[in-house]
Image 1 (tube, rainbow, N blue to C red):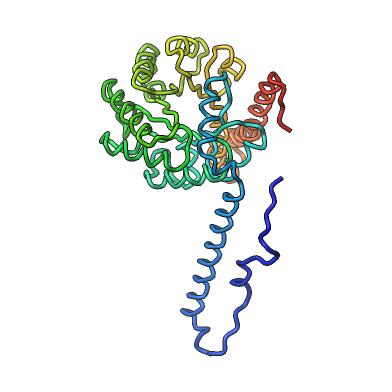
Image 2: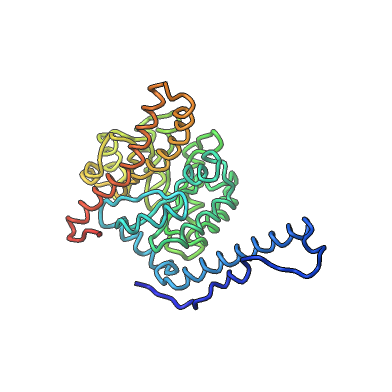
Length: 346
């Protein structure tokens, strides 16, 4: 257990409580507003200082290269489950359940800020990645969408900036702003991203995504051809979200071997055990959680304002069930996997 000596007095307490002044005009509304603003700024500085000190006291959080080495090793030893946190709080919990790595979710991060998926700027995403990486000793894979750039040179700069946040992996999509890149252009972007990572000297994995199945083109042959091309371009891991049939996943795994494959397990189509059977490297299970929470806020108003409508109550119940069960199901499957290695988290 880690302990620290910070003293018995909270440094922020000096700025809390009632201030008494001798000048009658100092309690004018404008002056009180300035005092309140100063107090808020002091409290914010205190919080940031505490967070920085907490990170400094935990060597596992700042051991960036150690995180990256563990992340690469995970891709070489078999299938593992990687949950998708959307903020600092959700990034801290998976470690206590025994998970070995995290992957950010662009959708979850956007929803947590009141936006839609794809509406965050590159700078906002970089700040989000720094927060997540600083919050956990687990390696973090970044959902970096299409690199937040059309020009490949800007793409390279953004990728290098993402590496600087402390991530252990980074994914690049072949779809942006309603347009899916043709294979040649998508390959060029993968190559540019790979070169950008190499230029930093960091051991960060590049994950290349073929978006066809979730972008209106569920063509398995096209998806396989793209993933094979991305692998040849330097991708360390491959990803085709939306492929929910086990037989199709099996075909992809065999076609892109020995490059690892990430599988998005969104729904009951197949289980982690099935993913192990087809020897995929990663199973991203817990996108279900941010989706369920988002669904709750969609259904909740209908429940409270249309309580007589059974469909509203049904949606509310299903959402809460999915939200509550997602962690338990993934945790149970993860524990079964660890039990096979003789280690089960408490």
